[in-house]
Image 1: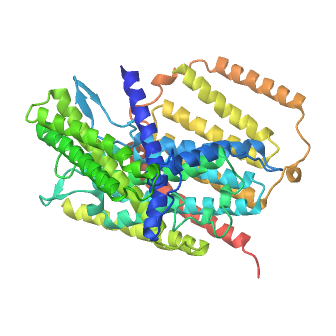
Image 2 (image 1 turned 60 degrees about the vertical axis):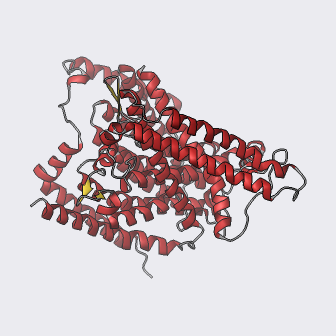
Length: 425
Length: 163
């Protein structure tokens, strides 16, 4: 039974980031086009159904699978082939300590909702992030290409420079919540300051939040810090010579790093799985209301989407003359069915008290949904910033990291310590 | 548990042996990283979780990155550093001698206690390391930071090009 729980948790943290990854690629393309006032990719179709660009993901996968995986001449084959795996492995490994819900108490046993409840919590993520550097370094070096080497060295320098403010910004969180373990930090964010404000990380550590956010962008090699893969400057940086599935691994590493950073920001600074103003005990106590709210939200959401699809179908009737007119039906009918099912469940179980285990599960689901919503918001934030800000130059980047952010993080630690000391008097 | 120890010990020794026998300096560096991570695993087996994390974070994650940086910037290739290579015979002889010495020592000092009772309850936890570092050993801690500053200034001075 223990093994089953471990396997289920491992599957959860394996599948959820990958689903986020797929959706994120699509959201990046559509979101960037939305920001740039254009339509974005919407041509790939399955039997005429275009799904607003989602089919492009399948086209991408097919292309990357079947592209020739070239190994250039003169490379060190072992390092060339290992490099993509190192980056991807470590970035996916960091998800092991992120809690997506509070500890589930069912049938007398406590099941923590993280894969590995380490005593050192967040430090594990810092350690694994510092090992991710080797993916870019190896890729740049092993490519036997000056541009790739430059990109690899720049990436290394950037990532190790911004690891320091990343770690120092979190020290403020450690001091405020007096623990290193992620689940305890999230639980500590459920308390209320002055009676109405949830003690989220961003409320008690605003400067730390800004520092961590900036350093997270730098760690994920993401605009405005994407000099290592600056497309307009050094071709593609450290993954110039990679093609096919190896490039796909680098591509996936970048997006899973975004998801990871979004998850960490949501966990440390925005309350993680905490539903605002509702602790776990309150959720379990009012489980029937929470369940009704969940059913109602998803049911109404699905119904709204289905209605929108119906309006869309009516509007484009006769415009295209091919399968595109049926798109609304393809999307709308499953959503309508889901809406009907959810609303039926809502009315059937309205007011019925769930059992002990059922209440725990309801709390679990609502907290997981909250966590995923926060994570999704920050993923969108990453994409939003990418298409809004220009890229940093290398010396500007280094100056920002060493001369601005490290002193600011020391100031943050000092002020946090001062405030804690004064409050505890 | 014993199998985990044997695997980790084998990996750390393998990393060390590979490090001194590779011709490519980058392969040596990565073998060293393998060895360090295996040693970190040994720390984790002793339930010293903070030291395990620090070993990966600082040693394998930061120091080795700087070493690799240096190797890449100096652009050391295989040919440039080749000296008299170590013959295979010599390597085998050395391994046999080391193994014999190891067994000899184990025979002599055979009253070492078993691994799982050798450490205290909170060996290597954050609280204990913090208390030691900032409590009992505060002065050496501060002196070390001054020493590092001296080293950095010395490196900058030595490596500065006279323009």
